[in-house]
Length: 194
Image 1 (cartoon, rainbow, N blue to C red):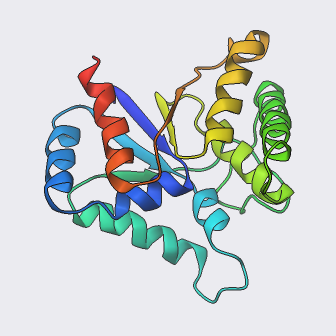
Image 2 (spheres, rainbow, N blue to C red; image 1 turned 120 degrees about the vertical axis):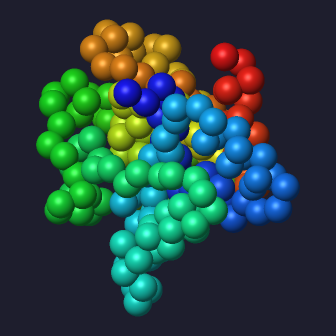
Image 3 (cartoon, rainbow, N blue to C red; image 1 turned 60 degrees about the vertical axis):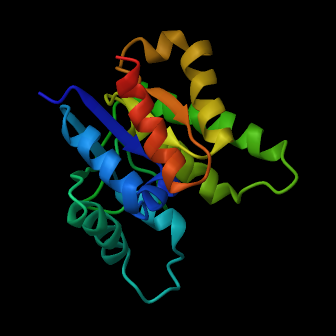
């Protein structure tokens, strides 16, 4: 059984896949020395690339995943833990129970409120994608994100909606700055604290 499961948001996936040089070697050595996995879903790719682009979404995720694997870092692509019309892809999502649906709804509401408070908020569909990314991290150890609204909203739902989250294993959301080194350091810091 895997001890640590790190669920990456879109930017964290892309940043980590561009890690190179000494930092890549340090990350690979330390990450591979413990019982851990990196995990993503199709949503991270769909969020980054518009459907109008010719490159198929699975080819894009395969490229990021293949880059990590080629660099000696294993990563899994799992189904999302729910379905949302306009976001979910048949064959890459799961039907969720009512409790997970309620957590998704709370995440969607909190992320939306956080985004509306910003000067340049995300489009509503991207907010829903962020909520799906967050809810899909359930049953994992950590959600690694570079998005402050996503991190803060996730932690707020965990803190304020205990009656919902006590029924599932909730990961801890960790915020990294937007660089490949910072994402790697965010993950490695967790090992240093154990």
